[in-house]
Length: 134
Image (cartoon, rainbow, N blue to C red; front, side, top):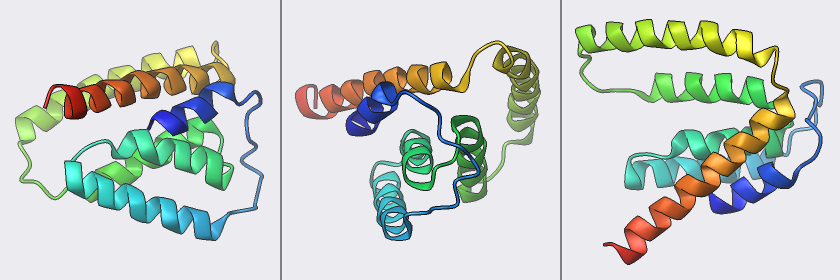
């Protein structure tokens, strides 16, 4: 997470979704590592999937976020608490509407950098929690 955050913060221009060049081997390795780490610790997939999609496949940031959410959604195998799910879905719809308005005002580069900083903070927090406070 920490290494991915640096590359997202430093990178200056947005990748084009028209970029058809996939680094297949790297994507397979990254996917395997993400799956392993997610299975091992039970969380963190989204913070790893998004940088992998942006950096290795050339997807633009907004498309990578949507793809990551889809990947996380299809992985869920838990018993569903329907009232809770409906509340979260309602809040998500409100968030989507607000995010849609804000996305026209904030560029993908700024979003990627903000996500990079958030990923860095979360990565450092997880490292400190696991190494220092465990």
